[in-house]
Length: 260
Image (cartoon, rainbow, N blue to C red):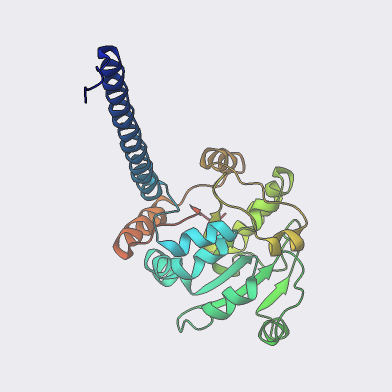
């Protein structure tokens, strides 16, 4: 039996198909490797960004706060050891002005060497028995900070404010900030949010009725100059030194001002 002759052109076509198939396989493999490389690069950049962005470098707890909304009042328990180091015996009598006032006052009252009172600028609704007890004993009171505070001049050694100023317009800040400085004998500490990094919690929005107006550091500095409030440089330096020692990185802006 004779063999059928093989068409040379067919061999060339078949070998061309094989060569083309190998080339396609090589391209597909290169594309897969490129995609994997881009994914790895994106993951590395994301991790690097999370560690370099202020306010996100303190572990998963801080991240969850930002995801659910954060308030600078949450910073106070963490900042307390640093404040005590910076102000020492100047923290004898403390007035805290801010939201969620009862929880902060109850924590500060546990400190043996600090007397503390609190002012809630907005209504206290749906509070627990502990909060009602603080109000009944006079440790906490509701007062509109757009108007003069019911305290004599220099009634407190230190006034600490968190979040409350972020809901006031400049028109009212012109009156409120000097009033807070008036009732302090040693200084005024302000915790306020960074623009773009903080979101008000749903509970705060329902209580205040409007979102916070978060300002930049340069805006606050200009405003302090306009209202003749001076930075307490000595206290600010001690606060920074204590923060470094305690590895405390504030997620909020912190300003230290001298009293009037």
